[in-house]
Image (cartoon, rainbow, N blue to C red; front, side, top):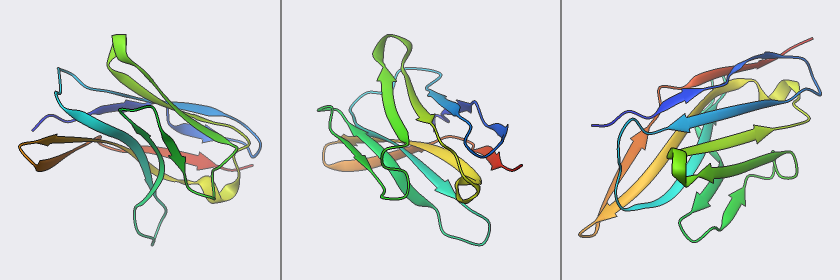
Amino acid sequence: QVRLVESGGGLVQPGGSLRLSCAAPGSILGVIAMGWYRQAPGKERVLIAELTNHGTTTYADSVKGRFTISRDNAKNTVYLQMNSLNLDDTAVYYCNWVTTRDGLRTDYWGQGTQVTVSS
């Protein structure tokens, strides 16, 4: 199965910004939604931002107003702009694309990228 390619994680101070990128190495047809999840140490992976093929965006309360999900169709890439980062944003971030075909859902995942917020 195709593995999405993530980049942009790293170490940042509280209040700083990072932009994550997620690209598909080839064409993925039938994408209905693109999203970003994160998993903090000892916690479950949770959805924090989602962009549907209709352009609707949804954010978890914990990131609303600070994070922005967007896409560049020409580059087949989805982004997560993260501003005003705080210690609670430290986690491994995963991108996720969802497709449907003949009623069957398929999820594509990135390898995960570490974001560490620390002074």
